[in-house]
Amino acid sequence: MYYLLLFVAGISTVLSVGTCFAFPTEQTAGRDCKSCHILTRHEASQLLKSLHVTVKEVKPAPVKGLFEVTAERDGKEGIIFIDYGKQFIMQGVLARMPAVVLKAPAEERRAGE
Image (cartoon, rainbow, N blue to C red; front, top):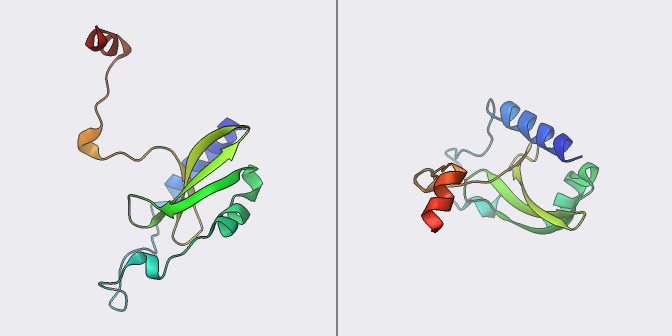
């Protein structure tokens, strides 16, 4: 089931690149995104019903245009992102680019010594 979720997240990511409904227009310029884009826990539960998860929390994601949903399944928590248009989901970790530093496992062991 985990691989199915990863597959769905990957496909969602690829498909969502072409269209985005979260950019400001003349009518919305200068307004807070949260004033128009709302996702309740109940609505997130309905959107994610096929994944058999329990929605714990919904909040704005660190990236504009996405909601960050904390969900639980089989006792494990994870993060699922839902776009403002409520058409796509994505699973994974969002990190600021300068903060991302990949190290080989051997380097991590040496750093801890």
